[in-house]
Length: 486
Image (tube, rainbow, N blue to C red; front, side, top):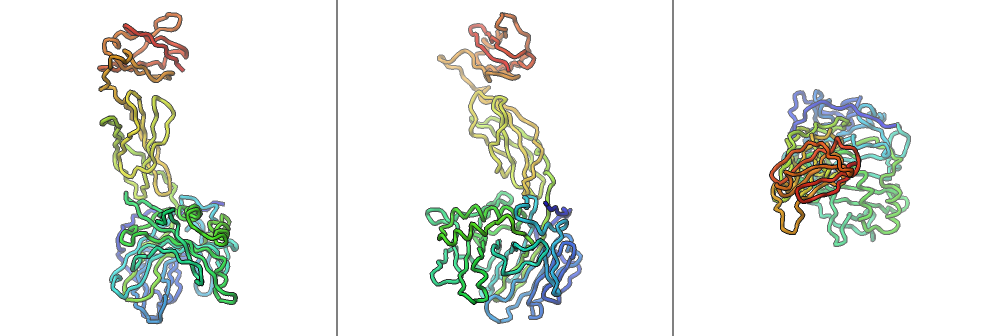
């Protein structure tokens, strides 16, 4: 059964939220909204690292928080301070997610593009030499019963989406050899990274895709990880990290399966990945987003973190126009007003043929069609796509006849050119103006047909829509041409 979420009707400013009523958490795991199971996790709450949030903004910002982090000096990773959505455990009790509210639990096979994650982070005083941290989303997949608490021993597939980090990742493969933790990246044949790309407001942001495996010795407390495939999305350029995430989780899940073909995995690891990665029967029970913290002193924030389901079609493009420019067709239309805008799709019909898609990745409100041919009639319309791939209704159609005003008839060319042939309704004729003024239509039996037309300098548009199907003769002063009417 497919689960649907409540759509949040709110305006989110992509900036640090202004808290009106700050509350500090006083335990390691704190539920802040039972319906969506928004929770906050801070195992450093009693180590001089207070985490705060605004109860009045939970409905609009979800699992947002601010933590004043100071390294307790214990070495290694201190904690994963984070906000949670969905299944959450606090006070020794596990609370399953509410599908109607947050969309989880949901099986991978039932996940649709309408399910989006919205997340934004910010930091303060977090780039000193001793600061070590990074911001990530963790996706918890589980093969247990729908409402059962996920068990670490049974979680054989994870996805982590990394955002900002205290330094640039090396993006180097780590061989198995004697390592208990090792990995490979998706790469081109020349060993360069094949990035996973998201476009936000016309800018491409790239992630490297890393496949991590484990080989702990028998009896090790972490031996259960040996059956696990851990996939991490790591920014290719740490100085050009996406400003926010507002995208379908399904994109990351599908990509983790697709990119296996670009990873030079040994046979054992490849077989394991083919079994575990994106297994459609797995449940998605919990999403968490926050920071792995190691050293330093800083203020780290989830500005907002929530899920939503977006079924609403964006507004249809308006103001579409088509102009011929140096043999191409330049299309322009008004800018969109959808805050979840993904792209425009442009469709074209040639000489009244069925429409076909010519691009689905136009990021701005114009497009130049460089594949047109002179003397052909083109019709265009545009639709808007949002980040859940909802489609708007088509824009009004615009039509243009390429080359109609600048075709110079050469001596070796026929006196007139007709198209399309066969014709359904409009027949276009280009040629010498003297020839066009004498144009007539006859049936094969010689009966002259009545028709309406629109004439320009060296182009005439004949309305054939009222004529019965069959063959007709198009006659001018010196020419006779057969045309078939559908």
